[in-house]
Amino acid sequence: MDKKTVALIGLAFELTGLVLAGVFLGNYLDSKWDLKGLGVAGGALLALVLWITHVMKVLKEKSSDNSK
Image 1 (cartoon, rainbow, N blue to C red):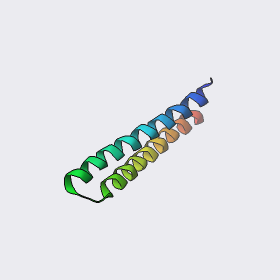
Image 2: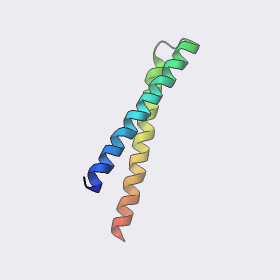
Image 3: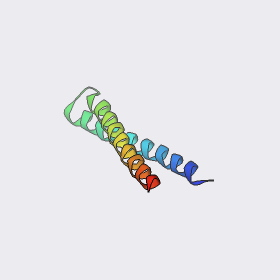
C-alpha cells in the first residue's frame, strides 16, 4: 500500500473511533441525566466536529509542507 492509502485508512479509523466514543459518552450522559437521546446526538456531533477540525489542520500542514 502507498502512503496515501494508509493515510485515508487512518482517517477512517479515527472517525470511527471518535464517533463511537462520542456515542458511548452520550449514552452514559443520557442514562445519568435522562436527556432523551440528546447526549448521544451531541456526543456524535462533537466527535464529528473535532474530527473535521483535525483533518483541516492536517491538510493545512501538508499543503504548507508541499509548498516548500
